[in-house]
Length: 209
Image (tube, rainbow, N blue to C red; front, side, top):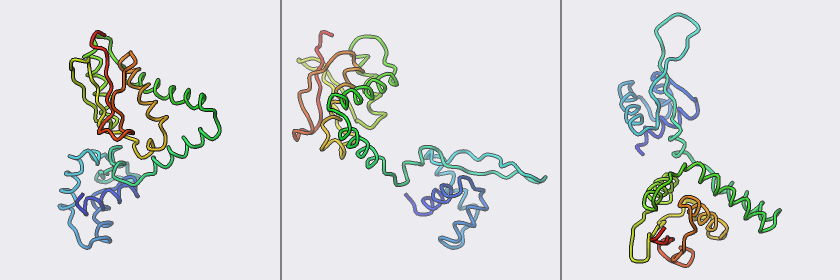
């Protein structure tokens, strides 16, 4: 990202909200003199990228011209460091240390069930369910596709959104299996697995479903 826009995101992150003039002042302290026109230009680009929300009126305690403030959108959170992976890994390790394998399995199956409910899958023929399943999986970073061949309907998952965690936790691969089974409504046959140095995880569903 262009450095000035990165600074604007950081300023809005620190302040929660800021006017054009406040951003100009804060930016000038970081990078030197900058004009309000230039800041507006960068803000419009950030709005176009859905990282900054449309300006809102700031309430004033005294009469005067309204002040418009800018804030970050939820999407902007992706541009700041986080430790989601570390937290999730720690939570899973703690579960496995305090619970039996069967209890851990039930917890992860519960997570998969919650995700299936969130997907609100439609009834219908297998291709319709696969279309919706792929849309849901891709919204969560799986990079999934499906096609039909002589063996049936093939669902391919090209990316694991928690790959760095799952390298030592095959339980998360089982979670994916339960998720896919729940989304489609029937258990798949896994024919390729990334843990076995395959390029992707591949699941086959009977073409007669």
